[in-house]
Amino acid sequence: MKKLFTFVASIVTLSLSISQVQAAEPLELQKVMKELGKNMQIITDGISREDWELVAKTAPLIASHPQPPATEKMRIMKFMGSDMTKFKAFDGKTHEAAHGLEHAAHEKNGHMVIAAFQNVQTTCLNCHQTFRGKFVEHFYGAATK
Image 1 (tube, rainbow, N blue to C red):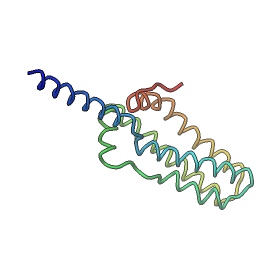
Image 2 (image 1 turned 45 degrees about the vertical axis):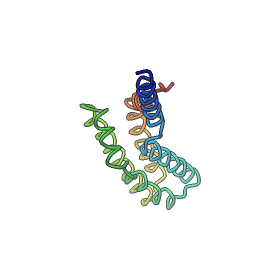
Image 3 (image 1 turned 90 degrees about the vertical axis):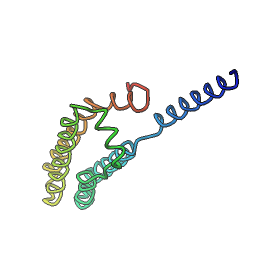
Image 4 (image 1 turned 30 degrees about the vertical axis):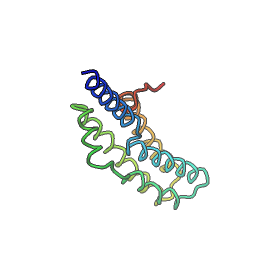
């Protein structure tokens, strides 16, 4: 009986350890966000140097960013529940804003580019302020500051 108890306790401990490791693994979405951040920095650099070609080339990378794998999307959708519509709407606004940025860069109109980039930044910020803390807490077990 004692051996059975020890075996069951070991299995439970192992299962809990595995779930903790899975919870701490970065989502593919996190990698997508990091890449988006790099592209935003490239655009900032392009704007500062009035390199409209660089801005026009980089904006579509934001508009058409990679999607997480289907299994991860299902996890996110389950977590988001009824907020999924709002989450997708933020993503759609960011896509539209990035296309507007691309168009402005093709026009080589610095004022339009800066206004369009502000729009991209605002759509990102709105989504982050609404969802980032919840995501981090749920998927990584730590609240953001």
